[in-house]
Image 1 (cartoon, rainbow, N blue to C red):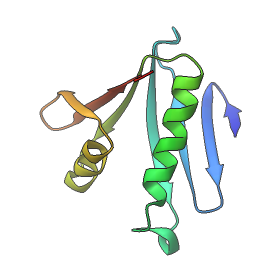
Image 2 (spheres, rainbow, N blue to C red; image 1 turned 180 degrees about the horizontal axis):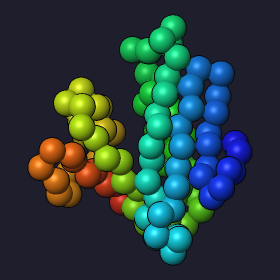
Image 3 (cartoon, rainbow, N blue to C red; image 1 turned 60 degrees about the vertical axis):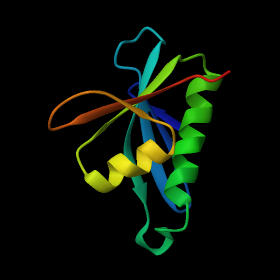
Length: 100
């Protein structure tokens, strides 16, 4: 895990995901730049990366995690992981709260 200019990068052999606290208040964290290597797609690796990101987010005291999604396949992906649409017309903002 690397921290670059306040962006947290979680990197494992088959993919990466980035996190950032844009509010700088430690309440909400945005998950972005989720990438899974082509050879590992459709094997649950993206789900694993998001779960790693959520574990990091909630372990470090954040109350909510957000993603911004345009792609209909990704909307379904995040909904299956428990994210809820909060607003948006062309872009969908999803959040999941800390369940602890």
